[in-house]
Structures are given as structure tokens and as C-alpha cells.
Amino acid sequence: MSLSLEQIALLALLALALGGGAGYLLCRTQMRSRLRLTEARVRDHEEQAQARVRDIIDQAHRDAERLAKDAELKAKDELFQMREAFNREMEQARGELREHERRLEKREDVAEQKHQHLVKKERSLEHGQKKLAERREQIESRSKELDSLIRDQTARLHELANMSRDQAERLLLERVERELTGEIASRIQRHEERFRADVEQKAREILAASIQRYAAQHTADSTVSTVDIPSDDMKGRIIGREGRNIRAFEKATGVDVIVDDTPGVVIVSAFDNIRRETARLALTKLIQDGRIHPTRIEEVVTETQAEMEKHIMEVGRKAVNEADIGPLHEKLTQLLGRLKFRTSYSQNVLNHSLEVAHLCGMMAAEIGLDARLARRCALLHDVGKAADHEMEGGHPKIGAELAKRYGESSKEVLHAIAGHHDDVTLDHIYTVLVAAADAISASRPGARRETLEKYVKRLEELEAVACGFPGIEQAYAIQAGRELRVIANANQTSDSDAIKVCRDIARAIEQQLDYPGEIKVTVVRETRAVEFAK
Image (cartoon, rainbow, N blue to C red; front, side):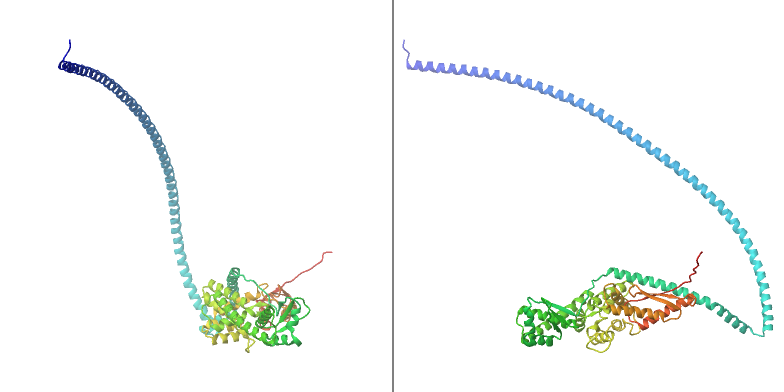
């Protein structure tokens, strides 16, 4: 049978409804099964979590019990250690207490002994006071008896001697004075010797300290200079035609030019070191230039002289700065610079002045004086040597006049310049220091030199002065003339005479001879007994 379209549609809708219901039921069934499965899983997880929590709690209980046991054991150990330490401290305290008790017992014993000793001293003191009181009474009574006896004897003496009391006292004092004159003289001599030894020792210490703190090099200058030439043909050009070049050079410079057979050098000779150095520099310039004729010689010499003046001023300023003496007049500075080209017994005078300045400043500082003023006095002490060829008089007098002329107003400086060679009375301590430092610098080994003839003559004169005194058998100059050893005749000279002769010889040397530094005089007096055993 055939179905209509409506029936088919209705059937389709019915089938669709049935299929949807079945699907819904199936889905719900599956959802319920899944929900039950999920709930089961959740219950399983909850059970596992609770079991894990119970395990953690159990483990925490076990750990807490273990920590409590460990803490209890540690506390017991610490308590035991503290108890041991406390016991040790208590034992140490007991030992110290026992030691302190022993010390107190010893102190009590010592105190008891001292107390007993003091008691004995008090008893002996009381006994001594009693004896002193008795002795005082006896002395007073004896004194009264003696006073009475002395009055009686004095009155009787006046009667017998027919002299008054004043006359007797005067006579007695004169006698005592005569008897004590020798004793007083010997005591004065002993005090003088001890004072002199102390002063000499202190002076040696100051001088030694100053010399050790300062050391300078010493160089010896001569009166000639050499100028190197490139070849011997240059000698002919220096001489010039018929000697006109060398004559013009010598006239312009004031030196002697020696052209001999010595190969490669020309000698410039002059006693004035400034002229000699100027000539050497000018000749060196002429040789380098090659143009040597009278006009050129005059130009070069004039130019070199101007350069030398500038160099002298620079040297003077450098010396003033090195000595640290403060501002100085330009003329005095120039004179100091000229001292670089002046020698004394081959010792450079400027180097000598600087050395004396440093030594004098050190000694002044040692004894509490103005070191800067001392250096100023010492640096200018030989300034007169820069002009002693141009002015009359010795260099101390010339130096003092120049310093005063150029504005030096310090009395100490002027006196030191004028008196460092004992030409005037020494009124200032700085003059003494300058003289001492001057002697040190001049007598330093290697500082100065003499010719052999002058050296031998000086030693012979030194020995001759000593041999001229009575009672002197022999005299020997030793230590390069620094010491004189004198042998006196023991039969003709006593000990007191030897002291007097030694002093007289030293004074005679000071008055009759000129010498650097100081000379030690030693008089030897001895008696020798010789016998032969046969």
C-alpha cells in the first residue's frame, strides 16, 4: 500500500523524536557513569591524600621526638661543660685565694719584723738622744772652760807680745795667707785644667759633628791653561805675520801665550785666573771661527769679557743662594763670583768660603746662635781677596772696607771679616766661629798644598823656635807640622817648669810663625836609669 507524503513526514518526525530520546537517554547514562567514575577517583584521591597527610604527621612526630632528644642531649653536654668550667674556675679562684692568703701571711710577718726593728731603732734613738744630751752638756761646760782659758791666754799673750787684738789678728791672717797661697794656686790650676778640658772636649764634639756633616771636594788650580788646536798649522795663524796676532791677543787679554813644540796644544799663562780664563775662552772661539786677525781678536776678547762678567755674577748669586744668607748687594755678589777664579795655596777661595759658611752655620746651630748670620759672616770673610791686588792692605781690612762701603751694616759681619785672622781684638763670638771654621777648611787634608822648600823651611823654623828655650835638648816637628814634640832635660827642668816652657813655646810660635790650622806642643820630661848586669 502506498503511503502519502504526510504519513511519510509524520513517520519521519516520529522516528526523529524516538532517535533523539534514545540519544538523550544514552548520553545521560554515559554522563552518570562518568560522574560515578569521577566520584570514585576523587574518593580514591582523598583517601590517598589523607593517608599521605597521616604519613607526614607521623614523620613530623618522629622528627620532633628526634630533635627533642638531640636538644636534650646537647643541653646535657653544655650543662656538663659549664659545670666543668665552673669547677675549674672555682678551683683556680681557691688557688688564688690560698696564694693571696700566703702573701698576706708573709706581709704580716714582714710587717711584724719591721715593727720590731722600728721598736729597736726607737730604743736606740732614745738611748742616743740621752747620750747626745749628756755630751752636749759636757761640751757646753768644756766650751765655757775653753772660752775662759782662751780669754786668759789671750790676755797673757797680749801682755807678753805687747800687741793689740787687731795687730795679732792681722799678723795671723798674713801668716795663714802665706801658708795657703800655694794650696790656693794649686786648686785654681786644677779647676782651670778641668774647665779647659771640658771646654776643649765640647769644642771637639761641635767641630767633629760639623766636619762629619759637611764634606767638600778639593781641587788644585794652576797658573796655566791649555787650549787644544785642530792641527799644528793653527799655531802659525795664532802667531800671525811677524807675530802681530799673538801680540794683539796678549795686549787685549793681559796674558802670555806660549806656542812651543808641544803637539796639539797652545798654553795660556797668567797669575790672574779671570784674565787667563777669559783668554782661554777667547782663543777657543777664535780657533773655532778661523778668522784670526787683530780686529777680530779685539772683538772676540771684548765679547768674552762681557760674557765672563755675566758668568761671575751668576756664580756669585749661586753662592749666595747656596749659603742661604739673605739679600746681598750686587757688588758684593760680583766680588764673591770673582773668588771662583782666585786660589790660596791651590785651594779655590769661593769653595773655601762656602765650606767655611756651612761649617760655621753648623757650629752656630750647635751652640744656639743665629746660623744664618754665622753663614753670612763666613761667606764674606775672604771677600777682600777679590780686590787685594787693586787696593793696599791685607784682605781682612780690604774686605771689611768693601762690605761697609756696599751697605753691610751688621757689626758681627764686619768684625768677622776684619778679625778672622786675629788682626783685631775678638769682641764677637761669630768672629771666633769664623776663625775656627776657616782653620778647619784650610787644614783639611788635601785642601791646600805648599812647595817642598816652603814646607821644609816651615818645619825647620818650628823646631828652631822650640830649641831656643833653655833646658830643651831636642825638638821634632811631626804630623806634617801639626804637632811639635819637645824633649826637655830632666835635670834642668822640673814638672812645673815643663808646663811653663810648653806654654811659652806655644806663645812664641803664635807670635813668630805663620801656619795653617793649629799646632799641638808637647813637652816630654823623663828620667832614665840605665845599668848593665855583667
